[in-house]
Length: 221
Image (tube, rainbow, N blue to C red; front, top):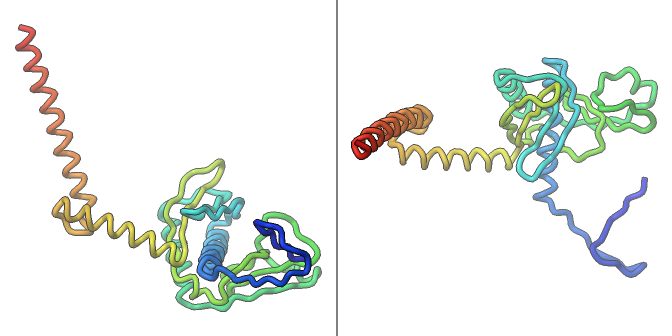
């Protein structure tokens, strides 16, 4: 019930100050956090894995799950989460009493008691959380799951949400467009073009080694 603000420099007692929320940053964090809830809830619903770790980094979000996820499963989760975003489901914030709380199938990393705040996205996720969230799933905009790797006994998933996801995809598209031009390949054919160039380079390198060996043999002779 007590709010504490930390300041870079001391303020005189009793001084009136004006504060302003950095809304662009706040909204970005809300998008990331709400998107993470939907991903974690969907993974749990389909595969039974728990979210055992969450980090909102400066470049990507990482979620650690208690089981291993494949790339195909990740694509399934991504599709379903974005469908929920399109449905623009309203976010609910619940404060159930202890008896009701005991009966609810909410997600939590630890056993909770007392005054608990639950964040609910329709029938898709119910999680104990005191963080900031969007008011409707549509405000998340987009969730892009980037990768899944084995981590301890489970998986570490990288993702981005909202504007950060859009910025990432724009950067990737710009890179692919440049590669497409350099290889004279269509945008969706750059991977095949790179494989072809790689094979040609390997063949050329092998030919160079053969010619060098011949040259060195002649010189030695």
